[in-house]
Amino acid sequence: MMRNNKLSLLMFLVVITTILAACSKKWNEHDQITDPAISNNLFQAISKNTSLSLFSKLLVKSGYDKIISSSKSYTVWVPTNQALATLDSSIINDSIKLKAFVGNHIANLAYTTGSDQRVAMINGKYIQFAGNTFDSANISTPNLYAVNGVYHIIDKFIPRVDNCWEFVNNNSSFSLFKKALTDLNYIYFDSTLATQIGTDQLTGNAIWDSTNAKVIRNKFLDNVQNIADESNQFTLFLLNDNSFNTEFNKLSPWFITPSIDTMNKLVNSFLIKDLAVKGSYSASQLPDTLLSTSNVKIPIDKSQIVASYKTSNGYVHVMNKLNIRLTDKFPPIVIEGETPTAFASTDKAANTFYRTSRNPVTGLVFKDILMQNYGWANYYIRYTKTEVPAMKYNVYWVAINDYSSNPIWNQTFAIDSNYVPSPAAFTVPVARNNYNEVFLGQIEILSYRSKINMYVIGPNSTSTTSGNTSISLDYIKLVPAF
Image (cartoon, rainbow, N blue to C red; front, side):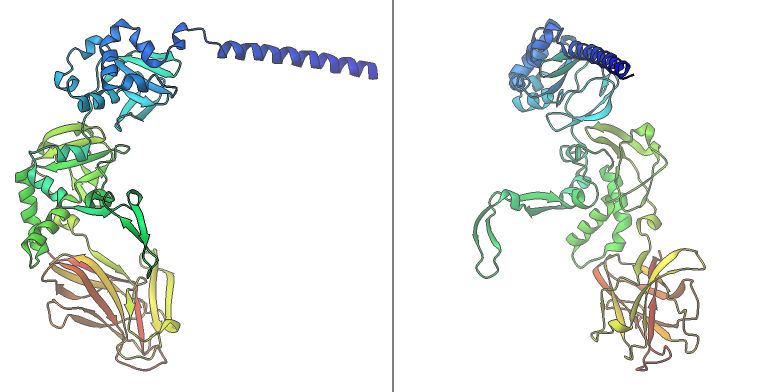
């Protein structure tokens, strides 16, 4: 039996060895270079194809011949001589334009057909490479290999185009929109570009030589949509000067300030903040409604599109009219009770509770604040809201009294200066188990406020028992009353 077992083991080892040898042979064959062209680098391979001689010359003139001759991996989409016959001489004779154009056909790393993705070009742009197409060009001969990458022959050249941000800045036809954007520029100190020249002996903070560290940034790009970002895609609705003026005049009454210049900048900023959305939509792809970053509904009337432009990171649609409803542009202002700015000076933390409950009316979970038996007359919680437009507001709140039926305490809403009526204070009883919104009254903010303080004030009592001194708030809501 032992002899048979040894024989079986020997046969098993022979079989395994044979299989491994066969696999090794196939892998070696797979790995073996059989195409003589693959011994060339990308520039050499392209240069040897006479139908690509014009692009080869452009590679040399732009200096990219040296780049794609290096040991790094690249992909080149090469237009034929016939495709380049219509290339504008102003591009060929301008070194900056030429470098941007040629770089629009070269990417780091090796990409073969069959993928569907936006590929980062060596000039910073992104181009769609899907199936056998490169942007709008067809790939006539795909997947030609060189020692340091792959190249594809295409039937048309792809010009370098502006992104959405560059389109606005490089176009003189939309002066009002452009000014609204550039007014949001500001100087930013970038410490990564600065040189430390010392240390403040009092604070220990670094002292910088900021000569090269001050860069221009833009609040629209920072806070709304970074339409200069090549790696993402956007749709920008650009208003011509007539339509811009129409929208500006519609919004102006809500931004009254002592300074006309300040008012104009506020209106401009508020106008354009909802005119860029994430995602690339051609005119035919546009839905009836889009949502802006701030969740404002943008109604799309395609008949009002004057012109559409494809950019390197999306589309720009020039609109004759873009009528965003005031009720969408100015949604209700909601201040959550559990996020106070401050309290009256005396510390009542021991009497303050932050709760999570379920509203039996809506079935939704909510958070609120409850103060009980704190023993201080007219104790208040302060809430601060920034950037409040000038208009009338109907004021509501939800204040939950789920523990005291006797007594029912009175609670006051008040607002700081610049108000109508006078006093801007509404006092109502906080009814037992009322989970509905309670209308308090109407206020009017007479001018645009960069900051406004609102107060929820408890009873005029110093009692510390039976709920005589209580404050409760789920939220305050200010609804514009146009």
